[in-house]
Image (cartoon, rainbow, N blue to C red; front, side):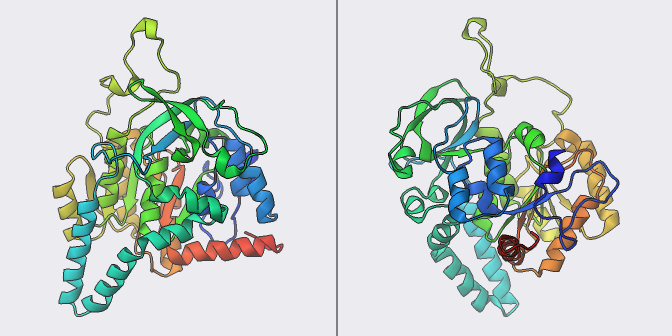
Length: 400
């Protein structure tokens, strides 16, 4: 019943699953909504994403003030600036990204368009920090974003909140409140008190299923797109990227699933001497399946991706061709864990016209997957700013 009330964007111009099926309608949200401090509380997240339009100050009052993490909340722990980077547990793939850009520039120069695009790439790289600052300001107070810009920090490990009960004066500012320490437990059993501003809530499949409709999350830039995918893809998920190119994003998600820890919701009793869930080696019939799949229509890209990242699977598919999309679905049923992707990322060039992006999303929704994808993450500048305009229209009484 809640799905009808929560659908945020059901305009005819935005793709939705075919009527008459069992699929729930999707809610379209700019990535900014998931950047709010929703503290792992699905009700708080619902109010942040799908609340009736009101002033920004009222939204912040609902989402950013006076909250605490509930015990059992799954979070990402971010590295503090003073801590050294651990190559095993933090983001990987910086070298891959640099190599990817180098190959792209070389290829563009051969076609005669490399100078302008190379300069644009260099400018984008040099101004990445500024882009981070600008995008992180959406939905946050500017002074808090300046002090605690979490988008600049490295990922460490997943953990679960044990308690968030450190005494904080009710009259203190939100900045001071975010400095409180939250007790968390990592996958190996170690516990630690972490500053609240170094935690990011994860939208788990169980929380998503019970409290929210499936989401289409739209981002304008690659680094935000990859960050959203990494934060919200858990070991319970199966991941697919459409437009994977050389497979960098798919490998990042695969590495995250393997190395960032699978933290059980209920920790085994120490008297039973049970092994944590992520250390158990059980053959559940999925041992031959992969958890991450990449799709692209470029033969060269797929060949390179398969060679560089053998733990993942990369397929040559044009998703805009219905017959090839059907083949992709049957391949997932036979080789992907869960028999269908629960999270699908779409990166078919961020500057592509919005009609092409929406057509790709519609093809995904039309397909008869074994299970409905709970989240579709789309990188598209045009669609991102279109959603922003829709929100303004909604705030003025229009439909969003």
